[in-house]
Image (cartoon, rainbow, N blue to C red; front, side):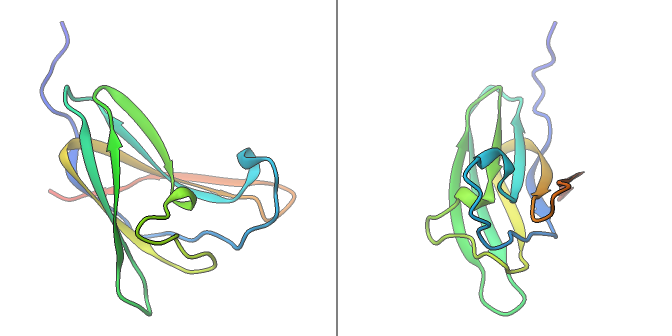
Length: 127
């Protein structure tokens, strides 16, 4: 029997974010990127609002994204462009708000060097 109790939180924070300038890489698998891996294990679609925070300007957003019920989405911040593209070579942090509980993990691929670097960590859940 499957437990249908909602899992996760409605608000998540990723304090670290940085996308290097475009490297001209043609294979998208190897382009440096930041990713929010979102799991929606619930029975209803999740409507996300993402706000980006910077050290030297006002926040950007909200970026709006949907994660279907019982699905996962690996959302590249590089692909966010409405209301504005995520700036390159700029430190930022993000707040992800959802109308239903979800789980968020943060992943970064840095391909600026010959030896690729990948890191992953759980986002911080608000209680």
